[in-house]
Length: 77
Image 1 (spheres, helix red, strand yellow):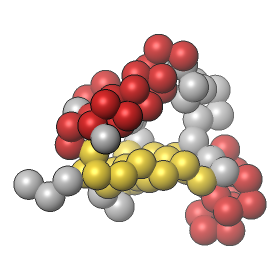
Image 2 (cartoon, rainbow, N blue to C red):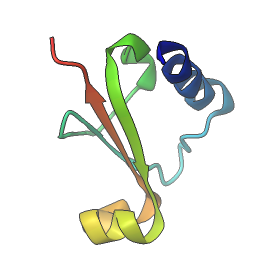
Image 3 (cartoon, rainbow, N blue to C red):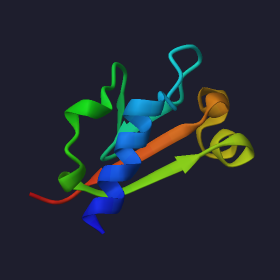
């Protein structure tokens, strides 16, 4: 399962899925991150990664979620 997570994050980095213009909001362990850099999060430390988009993001986060929401939960240390 670790390889899958590494590949998912690699896709974010290499394919530039996270847009610079109108980026989604990102929460790491429930904390809103303003200047996030996915390269600073080791894939080995990620427990889960959830992407909310469209109606589900707006329902949960209001207008802040209009560009999507990425929720990252890290493993307990």
